[in-house]
Image (tube, rainbow, N blue to C red; front, side, top):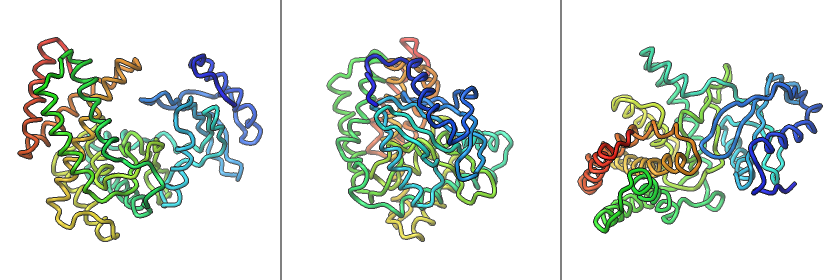
Length: 359
């Protein structure tokens, strides 16, 4: 089925999804009148929960219907789900898919998100619970990375890295702050970007999920040993080994003190070395690589959240800009080659206050 993208509206897509599900209702005992939004997404994908069960007799109580209008990545989702499953990582099972229409029916990993569980652990001062959840996630990441091989996923190459960071001058500096990117600023950005790209490209390259963060992880129901459930993995690539570790701990929606971060980073580093992953044998250098990799992601996110706001009309991500400004400044101030970028961040934050923008 080929859809006319220029004529699609959210309501027409929803009707298309309902009609498509009707064709699978008998097989999965779908109760279509229960169809309801399951979660939101920064992209144009939408997720709906519907009462139903899997054919093999596994009565989950509900399934997830996915509306991913082309060119959203259904084929990539299915491909990466198969790779993750083969690596022993808990992911949704693909039950039905229409690639051309951008529709999927998958198993439901439940409603207990890592973000909710970690926030509860933080608020309840339960570091043991938070540590257990994070270590489970890092163990799952190691299983995934151990299956890495070249030529399977897109390469997170220099052009890719640079394209992501260019979101900062285009959307954060120019669009959000209304500031011209003059020659001096452009030169500083180019030098910073070159440093971060060189660091990323000299790291060992592995399978990389790109959005491995608490919001995309689900607490698996016990006694499932494969905790957590992993979602939103269609953008997986082949890239730097530290990227997913940085994105897990330095997230938009929850932050950690340095002691907890270091505990998690050391845990991953030791377990990865023992498993045979090619992490740097010197923890100090591994930590620097991780911080610089995280800064590349922070730079991207500052621009991305502004683009989502101004282009896509989703303003709530703007509330999380301060956390990423904080992450970026902390890393840039720690390393002499990056300190000019830290100074630029200070100037930009001052500019935001002058023109009345809040972070």
